[in-house]
Amino acid sequence: MRTSRSTTAVTAALLLTAAGAALPAQGSLSTQGFGYPPGQVSTRAAATGGGIAEMDAVSPVNPASLLNWGASAVFFQAEPEYRTVTVNGQATRTTTWRYPLTMGALSLGPRAIVALSSSTLLDRTWSTTEEGGIDVEGTPTAAVTTYRSEGAINDIRLAGAYAPRPWLRFGLGAHAFTGRNLLTVRSDFLDSLTFTPLESNTSISYGGNAVSAGVEARFARNFSVAASGRVGGSITAERNDTTLS
Image (cartoon, rainbow, N blue to C red):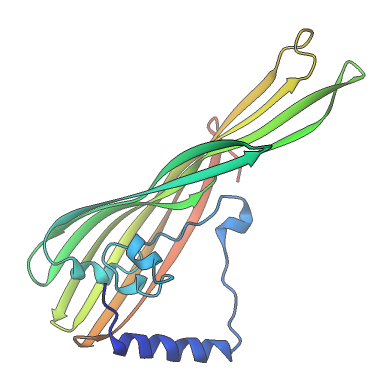
């Protein structure tokens, strides 16, 4: 991938400007317990720290950038995570596969395009273990309790872009947030001959919506300006058809 001198100069100027200015903080769903936001950007945009996300057709950020696809295409992104834990010379290796982004675009000519994408909005996959005692009929009993969460909230976006001029592009997107988390609490007693493990499972489903809009202006081959915004509605969490929040 080539980076033009013009883009590099503009990025450096923006970084210098931001370094000396106070910026207001934005709200984050992750602080409300819904999960961790992986960013909703492609591998190419992530390699630049998200710097080209507003102009990257594959990143479901700015719907106006969809016209950068050119022809109709399908994109699929996989992110394997490899972990190695070594204790007392013994190594344990695990591999976790994640598929954070899938998108398909249909070109309607040189000036219009529509696309449907599915990306991970918030990931809530984690596990932690606690060693302690559980009260069994008034008697503290040693046990190991594991708390685990698996699942995510996905962003299903239907978007379109139109170029009234060859250098000017507009885009609109409609978002549906859906997903679920499987919460598991399991206690294994050290005295396994007397006590059987205790396990409880809870499934929480989510639903929400949002709209987005964006614009991109390309003034030269190596210089363009883009901006986008997304306004979200309410998001609902339900457990067994009972609304939690």
